[in-house]
Length: 354
Image (tube, rainbow, N blue to C red; front, side):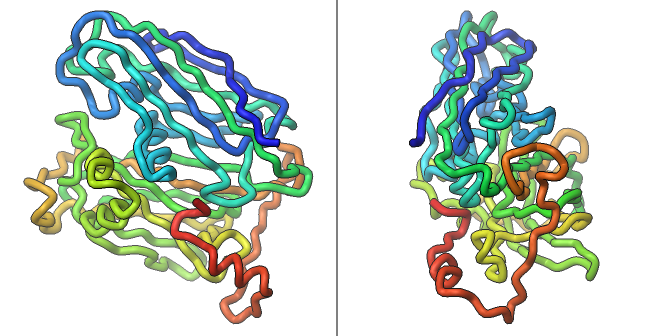
């Protein structure tokens, strides 16, 4: 039976730490709700301001970071998965509200965090008051309330554990801004999410990165997976949203990594240990006409932030080294497919199972 269970609540404390534990059941979805009251009037409220008050939010197990994303990334991924943005409020006065839910098996069927084996922690450092607005409120009083939806899957039969990694790259006025992620263990990656920030306005924008290229680098060199303009990627993402929500996703794109040779992992891309994923940001090409006035990347504060949504196989319940399945097989393109595999392939969707 699927159950909804809470993490312990945590009061907001500017720049203070939070570390809330959950144990007893496997986790399929992780979410949180942050509601707070402001004292004073804020001026020039930041993009994703309510989420900025939560800092970088991690889910940690056995001192390993399984999910590590900025608050804004939780907001965007939650919206992309559900097809609409969650309830949100970041006014100049009060109240503040930030909510998000990340659905693991929607990205890769069979994914979970096995908190029945070892506790999982919702961990991070609250943002400072200045993270909310250029002229911040004088005080914030509220609570972070995390929660989970449990999984009905039997962890003893093996499962996919999340390894969400997020890094920032300073963007300069170049067509060769390159960001590299190297995998220490065989990892399945259904998708990556990219955001671009203008440091001068502290906001997500569509006017700095013009083109994106994604490469898979292995023993045989680099294989180009995707090469599109920023506008083309925006159009791809916008199909998931109403026009109003598409506008809220400014400065963000989602790129599925589909490999039809791998129906056994829901047609996601497999990166073998030692291989890497490279993202190139071209910030010099001509901007598309509808995206606004081009902004020159300053090489100092403008950022490209990529979130790699990876999963690694666990043979059974434990977090020990022997429980890790470090090698994930790739089905050759010419290999015959079973009837079940063909059905799975027919049902496969662009970014995991909806």
